[in-house]
Length: 61
Image 1 (spheres, rainbow, N blue to C red):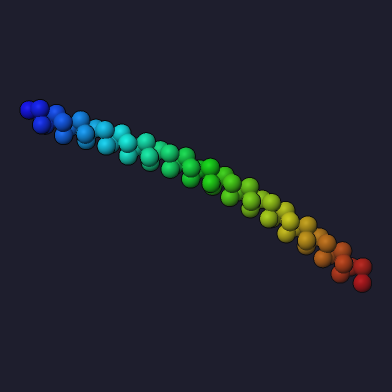
Image 2 (image 1 turned 135 degrees about the vertical axis):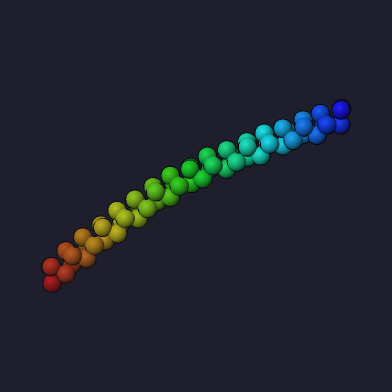
């Protein structure tokens, strides 16, 4: 009986550890996705600014 309790206890402990790791990795992925969206906004803004500069250069000639 005591052996079964040990196996059940270790199973519960392992499931808690794996759940904690999954939760941490999920939060890390959300943070990385947020950073990715920020970088995409910056690159889009730079691209639009460059298009405006090129349009002004073409219109001035």
